[in-house]
Image 1 (tube, chains in turn purple, red):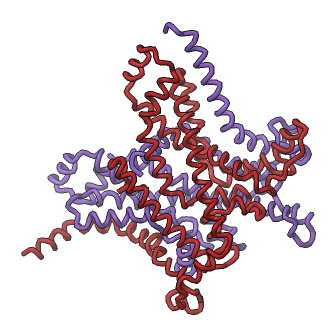
Image 2 (spheres, one colour):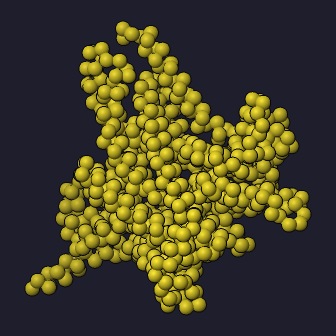
Image 3 (tube, chains in turn orange, blue):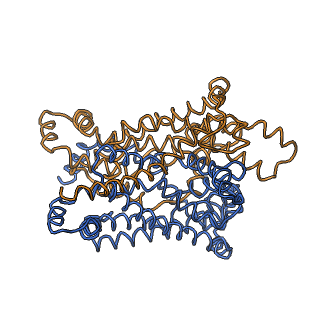
Length: 300
Length: 307
């Protein structure tokens, strides 16, 4: 307390640094939003800017009125996120619980079977060839759901250790004495008490599905594939098209090609609506995100 | 007698195996079958015959790969970028964590903590849009607003490989630093406050408290994160290197890494022998590095070891 003037100056100083840091983080998002409500001609003339000369809601009107492709992509992303997350969390919980039962024969071998996938993988080529040539998921909705995202060993093992450390053994014993089988114990003891970890892990799985664009890049192509594009793949494709036009490799009428592309403000509006759900849920779920991250650091 | 009792143990546990079945099947398909698929790298693949009937070609694919100059470039880029990412994110992460923990105003503290994790939630596609809005040569913010205000010539960012090491390190830090930062904050909160009380009674300055108490207490966390990251040093974020530089060919000397090479060889050039050789090179060296770094963790602190 004696150095309160000095302490005040110190607090002022660190807050200034952190406010600058916060601006560096937030301003790029603001730029995306402002560009999405900037008049297209202003954008072409002056470039992206925080203080555009003229504003316009054209991009959002366009998306609402004629953006069937965009709304469809949005719908696909929502569908894949919901279905993928539910499957991921169900499979993970079903897998984690048996690995906590000490009397289960081959428990160690099974745990290793899960764990080893974190250490070694076959890489893209065999995975790609298997999914495309043998399982034929190319240009189907399974391409967005199955590869890599459906189950991760890391999630299973984190859920398992939560079950072991946070659910008291006495509860299992009590359930067993009551004559409950494994299924019954799983649904009436493990699931309700394991809810915090299941929510946290589900959140990370949902985030991975929402943000995924690599599966679409690998396994969706051509007209048929484009119909299944989620919002991230749509964004990716638009920017690829622009690069392609800029590369000068286009044959024929460039003007006609350019006219087919969504304008800059529409692209930025799509990017903004792709981020929007994350901005909306983040304040409510931040606690779970932070817990999930610090939990992960404790054990791989 | 013994056989019967074992049978009854299985009988007792069969619902558990049933519960695990879908997950085990998925790992078998998604992870274990592709592991077997590394044999492709040692074959001269012929789709008419199928993967198993294709003739073996020994190490030919690897010979071709390592004779090309790409092998050196992608290995160098993957390793150097990872080293830079680890160092920059660690230093910035620790510095920001310490600053945030020093803040007295709880509302501001919460705000900073929320802000720093926000970019972590965004996809690489979004990051590439943001970078493009800043760097696009025709209408990017940097060329149009900042450089023109300074009276400088616009820069063709997507044509100049020399800028990309800085752009990618910065972009990666912007997106990923929050992750480590939260972990450091959690460890700083865990430090016994009586150390600080004693130190300030003895007249220690803030700086002394940071270097003598905070940093030494963070060492176990730093080592754990460092070794986890070193275990992944042969892998890189495909999106960061493919999407953010817009797959621009001119930039390959400074943006091509093993992951992007494997993808381009497979999908864009259809060259399965080269891409599978590079993929197996990554899997095997990556595996060796994970094992090695875990071995080191076990030596340092058994509790923190992965296995």
